[in-house]
Length: 240
Length: 240
Image (cartoon, rainbow over the protein chains, first blue to last red):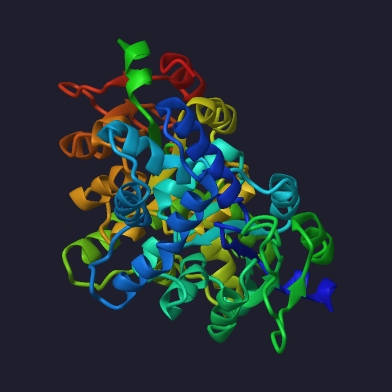
């Protein structure tokens, strides 16, 4: 069945934060570096988790219409400003805050990501489908060597995932049927929302996304077109 | 001065039809192939030139508001349908017309393009800024091996060049100042419109764009930040 599936799919679009890159490990390293440089004692893991925890509520303010369309870069900065106060970090210059906020542009890929994407790119159009803004995703790709054919973002639809408009955009803009496009993600809810718009789904669990103590997603009752342990296994399953 | 310029620029965006790819030579080969396959006598060069000649008037109908936003793929098809009648070509199936229209997705790059872009990509973000739609540009890049970091199109601004909105989009979406972005094009009018929005300009004449008998553009009184004979020379001038 999977071999057949590979023949029908033309494009794979990837969730990015957590699926392609290890946002948590990367942020911890960035925060630890800043902590050393500034001589500030800081729980870097908690800081990273708090920053990420602010993400969904901030997007929800956009999704609900409370905020006009606002890029993730700007949402990350709003969350950061609150966190600096909460964690008692004073004395960062504006340039240092801008630099820290750009940590999200420098996230490191999971070890299999570049190799697996390079392999998938030989057979499929590969792109992002992230809530991250285009500029962030382009900087990240340059930094991490992610070989995207196309950088697609919720920014182009002005609708954050899981709004349906975000999933309708990739097939529309690429001139493909929804069933010719697969979303690859480590998050079952993201995949379920994509499936409701007719996209195919590839589930690649990333058990370390939330650190060594993270719990796997409960996928009872969920179904996906493909499940793979990493991007190399995904390539094998899709015949790439 | 050019060395300095390279240090200030972060992203190069390229006009595509004529600047990166040889639309005319490619279309002639496609039309000749169809002509042989269907046993129809046809002036392929005139067919190619007529197809391209329909492009500006069709975009003008969108720019003026006579047509709602319409992708180049659909404008190309509208022009093609008229041309088939004009050139007396009957008996193409719908699939053959669709296939011929997709000739624009398969245009061949100028001989220096892939090498020069690969070199420029080491130092700069490289992307398209074309009136061609995203899907067309992604297919073309896969076909021709164009190593874009980002595929930007007038489609994302819903304004065709030379509308100012089309040139404001790349710096905005990449989070850059207009002066950190250079448009590279073989067309002085395109570059002049970009300069009016604060972008830097790189002129790469393509004297064969309109065939061996084509006239070079008159650039009397024009000025560009860089002029280069091809993309390799452009890379050298920008320190890449």
